Amino acid sequence: MSAVSVPPPKRLQKPLVVPHRHMFGPGPSNVPPRILEAGANPVIGHMHPEIFEIMNDIKSGIQYLFQTQNNMTLAVSGTGHTAMECAIFNTVEPGDSVLTAVNGIWGERAAEMAERIGGSWRLSDHCLILSQALLKYRPALFFLAHGESSTGVLHPLDGIGQLCHKYNCLFLVDSVASLGGAPLYMDKQGIDILYTGSQKVLNAPPGTAPISFSERACQKIFNRKSKPVSFFLDLSWLANYWGCDGKASRTYHHTGPVTAFYSLRESLAVLVEEGLENSWDRHQKVAEYFHRGLESMGLKLFVKDIKARLPTVTTIVAPRGYNWKDITSYIMKTHNLEISGGLGPSVGLVLRVGLMGRNSSKHSADMVLAALKDALQHCHKSKV
Ligand code: PMP
Image (cartoon, rainbow, N blue to C red; front, side, top):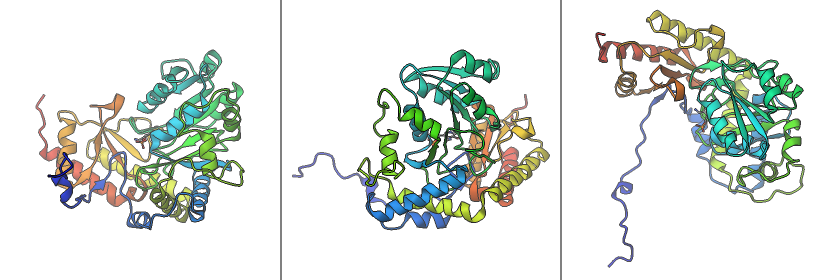
């Protein structure tokens, strides 16, 4: 008689099957073979000297991508949410307040994280203007999503950092959906904490999140009265693991995801080869081409102001008379292509298409346009 009461599952005795799919939703994007192959390298120790070299390469790549000289630049082990929590949990102490700009789901999420530690205030379009809110609430941190992937809005950044600093407030920017696809200059724009994700414009698998902290942010973080609520995301530990604290030796904190580091390094190398400005330019041109194609099919863009359209993730007004789920399912089934519906406040209102990194090409845009045209002809349309 067997000693184990739970038998080996039959499902794991079948081979792994993963379909090839066109990943044109708001992320993850397709991972090009070069980046996938980098991830297939042998696993070595997370404290081996070769890994530290790879981590140093990643750090330089992030400094270039973010346009920053910040020494406190690294990649957290986890997705965009991990970087969000890393930024907020390290900066905010009990008693501090946080102001978040809410122009979609990400401001809401940041506010919800901040509420777990300190006071949180939301700045929506109908609320006070930023300078009044900074004066009224005296926040320690102001959060803004540069690219709101739920609504497809690109928020301008110029002047905000300087305004925050006037009120002794740190400026935190989420660029998960925009970085590499739209111009951003961390140092010049006075951004104190900036993070992104690996799975969008960078075209790496999800699971690592580049982040950087200004000198001003470090001053606040390393002079806290209490320890951050998260041990895993405590910047003093992460700074040591990433060789950012000036100490001669590194101490074990967690087992860094070495395979994910290889992929991230390769994705940064691809971006370095193309050049940041060329990447911004390509995303902008492809987005404009795609938007013209949508409009010529009679579809409407959700973001009316052309300058406020995110070049990476496009929101299309859900076509009248259709159930948006019928459209996304039809396109997945018939074209093997992912586009998605809305998220948070945009659920039911929009379809979302992401053309990011290598997927930002006229060829991919044409594929989505053809798939949408086909779906509108074949999906059920109500008469009313
Ligand atoms: N911020 C923005 C703007 C995003 O688009 C996303 C992912 N959709 C996130 C944060 C969270 O990233 P993740 O899903 O990798 O945790």
